Image (cartoon, rainbow, N blue to C red; front, top):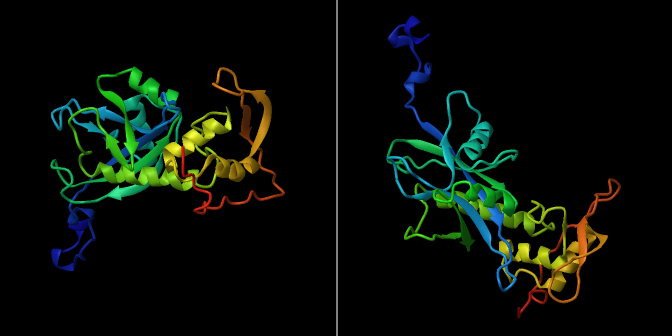
Amino acid sequence: MSQDLPESSREPGFDLEDFPGVHMAVDVAVMTVGEPNEWGERQLMTLLVKRTGEFEPGTWVIPGRFVRYRERLKDAAKICLKEKVGITGVNPRQLNVLDEPDRDPRGWTMSVGHVVPVPFYVALKAVGESPMTRDLAVVTEKRIEFRSEQQTLPRSQQKILDYAVNYLRSRYASRPDPKGFLGEKFTLSELYEVHAAILGQKFWSRDAMRRNFLPFLEDTGEISKGSVGKPAVVYRHRERDPLTTPRRVQIPSSSQIATEY
């Protein structure tokens, strides 16, 4: 290798030892939508873990892990979810890279941010197995509502959360529950609640959402049970017709936006 060449004839960058090392990590924003509260509203939530080691003890963070030798990023993210919160069988999506040299006081560390949307029961199970070191926190306007005195996420993790929220918003603006928070079957009211939690209450009125999304849905022939008021029709996602292309949903105009709720 480099020792075989005279020092004077070596070109810069010939050997990887010429470059300073950098540590690599993955952080995964686990996103979900909670059950309706007493007012029938759902909330966007993220899964946090409390650090228990010598570094940042007691701090709530997005699940993260250092990348091991010859480990691919996607594998590191999956292992992180399994080890830190017990979630398996999912495929985290890469979002962004945190590369500020001084973001981690332990040393120069780059982190690749990921997002994985999961149904509420999956996130709740993860918390239930270790409630003292895991928790679900409400996300409002891309900010976390901590239950402790903590105000922000450490080491620029807030940027990962921002990307995760934008990722969900971009997909929920054009398709009915594309990440399956509601499962296979749902009512239009349940669909509205999920989209309102992600996009905001004033993104659509209920009627505007109905007009935009009905072409993507089909009636199951079932009626919801146990709901307050008139029984509601239960829908599921329509099988895509290979001979046609579903129309894109239009961003609502000012006349479509609800003024009262």
